[in-house]
Amino acid sequence: MPTDLPNERPLRAPGTMELDPSGDGIALDETRRLIASNKVEGTAVYDRKGESLGTIYNFMVDKVSGQVAYAVVAFGGFLGLGESYHPLPWKALTYDLRLGGYVVDIDADTLAGAPRHGPDEDPFAEPGYGERLDDYYGGRKPAI
Amino acid sequence: MPTDLPNERPLRAPGTMELDPSGDGIALDETRRLIASNKVEGTAVYDRKGESLGTIYNFMVDKVSGQVAYAVVAFGGFLGLGESYHPLPWKALTYDLRLGGYVVDIDADTLAGAPRHGPDEDPFAEPGYGERLDDYYGGRKPAI
Image (cartoon, rainbow over all chains, first blue to last red; front, side):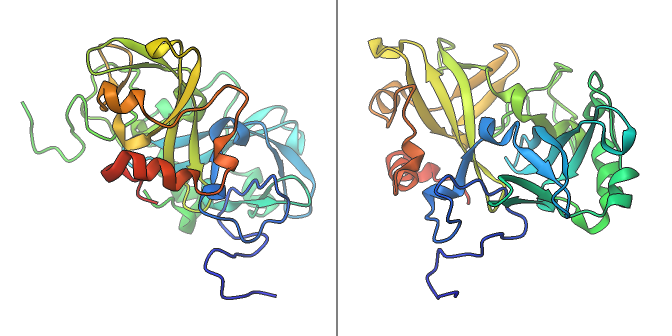
């Protein structure tokens, strides 16, 4: 049952990249709010039904503000497309303690039609790619 | 010479983790503001005099806000201390295009006495470690 303790929060807070080794997911103090970049990379990613989509390949950080904008998820053969990389809005990922990975709160049709690239491509080098992503995901534009 | 173009900024903007492959460092568009997490890891780090300190091992991200708080720098034998890991405030790092790495805007004495840990330690698991870092670096507390 929730209390009024200031640092208590739900097991799966929307918009978090929670990876809490203690396993309880609540009453995390300020220190436990921090996660190492190389622990996020490689973490499993699931759809809303708990089906495996792939793993987090890396994530894109705004150099000026230091804000994480997108997580690039490597989809292994999702929808029969072969290996592909999908930059997803960071705020659409929530860590699920039971699954031990991130759940993507985006429906399957939206994911299937989303911007993606191959393993040797760097679409973020293209002018306007960030805007294209933001347009595609609508209200999920990152707060940068 | 500076102009009034909205996306132009100095070669070395304070508080940035700039890593600009184009090499010009100015007139970066919104897309070029983003950098991949795994490209930050391993980048060289220098002191104010341009002397090598080590490399960026990883960086700590606030799970709730998605804000980068600290860069953990692996110091290879700095000050005769052997390999050690120093979490530095993210805002103290500036990318230097000439050096091809980040410059730490912290004086040598402050660095020498700063909180650090060994390769097998995880100080961020200790309650209050973030507060200890913030206290040590004073006004450089991250905006999270």
